Image (tube, helix red, strand yellow):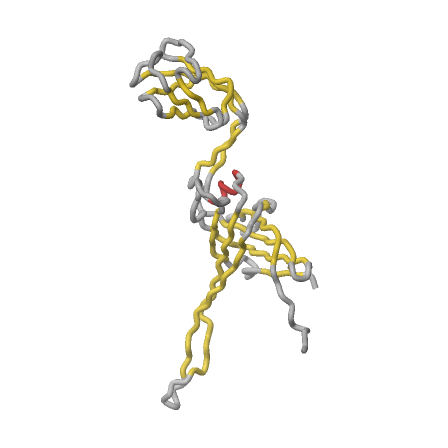
Length: 248
């Protein structure tokens, strides 16, 4: 039995991404790793035109001509980093160093409903009523410091509804992503890894692609969050769509 042509492939590796310059269509940044990427798939579809003979009357096919060819990429990301969130939802990231807020105000409309602070992961929280009297945690209100929420449980020292409270607190460094603030961008993608069946190096390059926003965000789920992203491969300035390199 001949075994000369039994090379099999099962890929493993990392996926990297870089933004493309709008004019040159070349990367204008270094390639950033996307973190754990359990899926990286390229699908190609073709359309054909039948050419039929006219002599015999049976209209047999004499040619089958490709009229178009399109390739699409699908990838799934497990890394919930701010860079991936920004990328997946066309967003803009702003960061805040750790700091303090003095006198953040909120209105208490009812008991047992949350007042949500501007920042996450708070500490040294001091809550005062409209008379500037300091209120007591677990007596007047409960506090979830990590979530930044205050819930009033007693109305002895406040007026319900409509009491204006003031909150002082410290907070840790944090970031936020405002989604869908950016327009469509073009990217270059590279999968750099190896063939698990023989351990040899493999690299797949997509020089130019347009990628969609993530299809879903499963914010509360029993599973690890996966950001599923798809897109279309485009021909670059050197007429390349996808390049596959492998170690001999």
